[in-house]
Length: 416
Ligand SMILES: Cc1cc2nc3c(=O)[nH]c(=O)nc-3n(C[C@H](O)[C@H](O)[C@H](O)COP(=O)(O)O)c2cc1C
Image (cartoon, protein in one colour):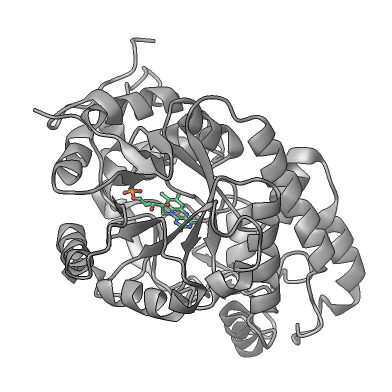
């Protein structure tokens, strides 16, 4: 029986263990986690979601405080049009977060950044350009274009000196999305270096509608693979979403995948950014405790634990401090939902909003517990202690379990 270690991922001149730890937004996939994946010879992702906030936590900077100070006068105003990001400060925060991570890199693997198009930041094109270019300036090994079609993203960096040597890939959930991206990017005369095919069992936002359950990763993977073969294009394919064991991963590799992208198993790693008590919530979750809902103001369905404090929370929109989801016109679906509830319940002290959530604040505060479909199997990957908590795992342990285990086997950590 084959295992992941029987295969290698070739990206440019790099030869890697074919395990990619996916980006998990707002510092769930920390630099520490990504660095471990790289040290072990795979690919680790940091995320470019809310980087100024992440930098403040990591480097004791004051990007958020200073932005809030600048726009404090607007807090009670429902019109957020004026709340803009300072592009120079955005570049500074991005370069700091990435630069320090790259300086700390050891070992033969690579560090990529997950770059979400849906972070429209009240100036979608301008802010995306800065985020992409700053990542390249700071020496990131690669950029994974995520959460959006990215039809203009290559054009935003085509004149950057690293455009042709950095690894650039995209996450798609259908053949159609990949075809569209390639058609729109053709003018830049550059193919993606890899394509992540994310199926409906993934964590975070889904590239499907609420009918996600009708879709299947293996089928989409086979469609994309067949199309690339007819086009005579040799682009490494990296399936993602619900690949829970080394055996699952090896099956995809045997069927032509170049690597697998995984995330949920790493949410209970010591190096993962979720606070430890929340990691225990992930361990303890049963299948019925997980849902896909529409509360993200991005418009994409999102999978999460039903016990997430973000669900039903009615906090005042916090766009002056954050504002990452404001669209090109300064709107966010949460602002509308919140204002509607305030208007309907004028005397209520504590507003509840059920249909949307203030995603920036809730993700920043780890109150929205997004997770993959198989989160309910995490309890089978560790040992339960007498107080009913579970032993947190090292990223190395999880990585090596994917790398060496075969079939349905999952290696448990050593007895505490
Ligand atoms: C907690 C969590 C947060 C995630 N956040 C993001 C994100 O910010 N951007 C993104 O493109 N994918 C995100 N994902 C998706 C992962 O990068 C990955 O592709 C997917 O979850 C792999 O499936 P698995 O979790 O079943 O292994 C997230 C996944 C999890 C579990």
